[in-house]
Amino acid sequence: MIRTAEFVSPRHPDKLCDGISDKILDICLEQDPESRVAIETAGGHGSVHLTGEITTNAELDYESIVKEVSGIDKVTHNVVKQSNFIKQGVDVGGAGDQGIMVGYACDENDEYVPQEYYLARNLCRFLYDRFPYDGKTQVTTDDHWITHIVTSFQNTEKEQLEQSVVEYMDFEVEDIKIHCNPAGDWKQGGFDADAGLTGRKLVVDNYGPRVPIGGGAYSGKDPSKVDRSAAYMARHIAVKELKDKRLSECWVYLSYAIGEKEPLQSTASDGKTSWDISDKYTVYPNEIIDFLELKKPIYYETSQWGAYGNGFKWDRDPRIGFLI
Image 1 (cartoon, one colour):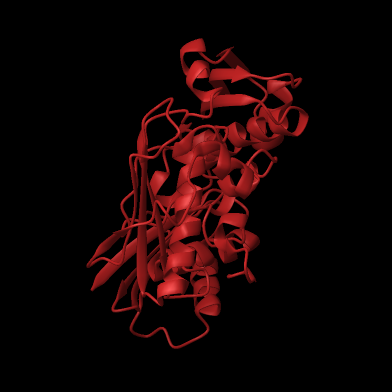
Image 2 (tube, rainbow, N blue to C red):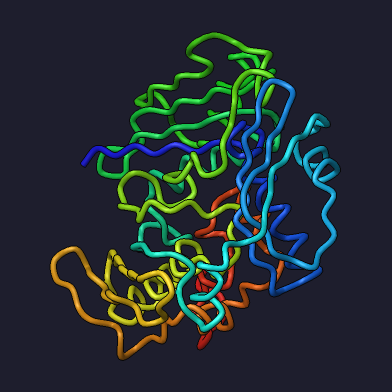
């Protein structure tokens, strides 16, 4: 089976936007854990625009937040309070939106994520430590054997990248086709070169293209939005079911109607059969928030290297501590 996944560095323009949105969310939650936040960032070519809905007692200095994350000091914003029509459903414990959330776990590595995604992310992290700029990695595998590696990093010569990739692999690479800066070396990156948007790297934020996603973005949303909190809970359940049933792969599906706390679907699957998990796990929005401690300022970190496989609480089994 041939599979490919990519990852992007925190200086990629879309990731800068995710980081700004989640930094604003963290500051809101740090000062006011009951904050309601749905903030979107669009940036590029010297300016950043913020829009969305925030209801909070926190003091926010949008200009300083944006400059801290991206270095940009030209900021415009049009942010209003959360709609009362949404508030009336969330205040009584209902979901902050409708949607289907997908959780996943597999036994292919110590992070319980698809192997091609695992390889792309860890290579990106390794290269970013050396070259802290806008960059991307991509890894193709065939039955878990690496066949192609693609890397593009700003301010980095092709030869530097090739040497670093070979050093990272730490094994014979003769049969691997390595493509470093395939369009040529490049100096202009991030917001100087391209525009970015919050939530445009959905597949990178999840598990790579092998695993379906519900479609909702994570960054900039407080945990009343189930497209974030329930996705984290679905991952937690997938890890537990994988361990409990000794599976090689596990998918978990949770779906909700806006304003209602009872899930419409709560099932797990091993790819061949599926089973109901509604009697085993409590997945009401408020219970998820309390169980995973989601009113804490933890979200900027999730925007940098992904939400899964990095030791967050939803990656753990409370009976035995960390699984990964």
